[in-house]
Image (cartoon, rainbow, N blue to C red; front, top):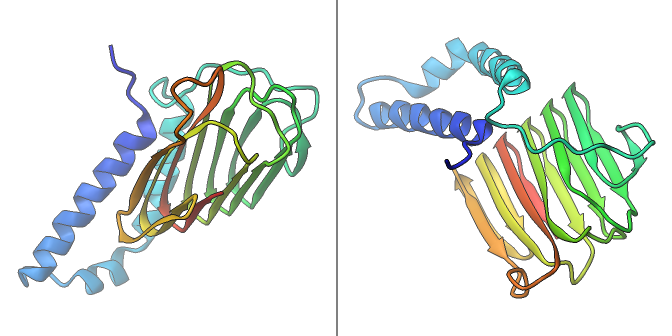
Length: 199
């Protein structure tokens, strides 16, 4: 059975709701800006619901990856990124000789992940990043075989120079040697509001 990723389902529902509201606005059946002005706190409530449901749902979970002895957080970490936060920026760096992916999630704050000095472990390693409000930046070591799927509801997406912006931009990228590579990194980045940069 195909694995369902909770954050993709949640993001899809938000896009559908936003699209319906904007359609009604263009048909002059409701004033979108007045609605937004009155009910903007619902965005925070929805973000909280997302965090709670994602925390307890098996849908969005990656296979469990044990982190190295260094605690997750700001700074140098071991062979996996494992960090979840509601408030604050997340800045992680790995110089692992066998990076094994992981997951990083935040609601309010920027995410900066640096793999520019890390080598990927054999096999397909998976890295999942989600953010509600903030920017996401991922740096990978030049020459690393990588596949990236990056989507945001509102913001810009830049993946190795391919750029999209506006409402609901997304980019799917795969390096030419990805399929044959013995060690490769699959990255999923999803976000509600903010920019995504992968380089």
